[in-house]
Image (cartoon, rainbow, N blue to C red; front, side, top):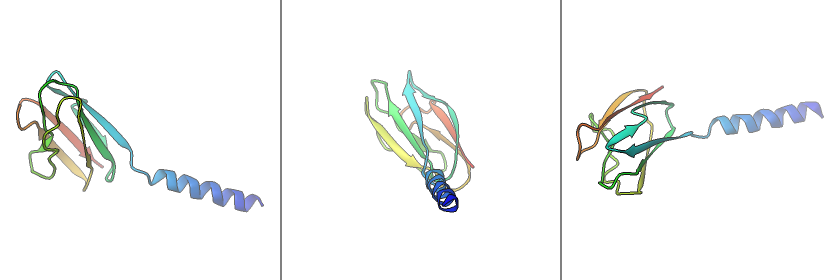
Length: 102
């Protein structure tokens, strides 16, 4: 009986470990907050725009682009291959951020 319980606990733990983590990046006062995040491949990054102006989060290497995120809107991307991804807002290039995928 104990063996069955242990197997069940490990199966549930493995299932929970395989679920992607959602990381939040807030856009406010024409800045990404946090400006740099570290995630695992498969995790989700959600950008939420708290500014009055539309923004984007666009990778400098063009590997991702949220397109327009309007006021009070959100956009999600899924982290892909390991690496460092610098991004900026297409409308406001001084708004920069970095995603490090492990």
